[in-house]
Length: 89
Image 1 (spheres, rainbow, N blue to C red):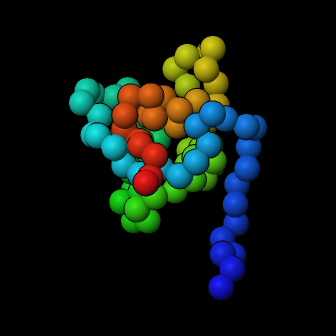
Image 2 (image 1 turned 60 degrees about the vertical axis):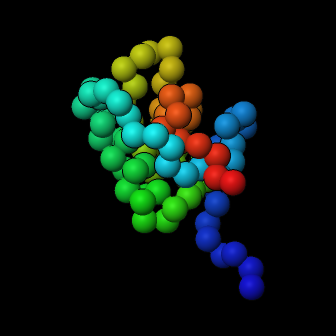
């Protein structure tokens, strides 16, 4: 049976792939990061794993605190960098 789920594709990223929950954020997050993290966390808690671009689309309203790193995909990459998300194996 073919997978008929829609697939979100964005600008190519080195982080493209499937992710699952990693470690829990160890520090208090600013509100806009906490809001976006809760969205990602609930998706992965429900589904187990998700594509990088799907996670970025889920937090498309994310407000970056850093003007040099705009966009929701930057937040997802930030979560990967900090180990909150890890590649699904």
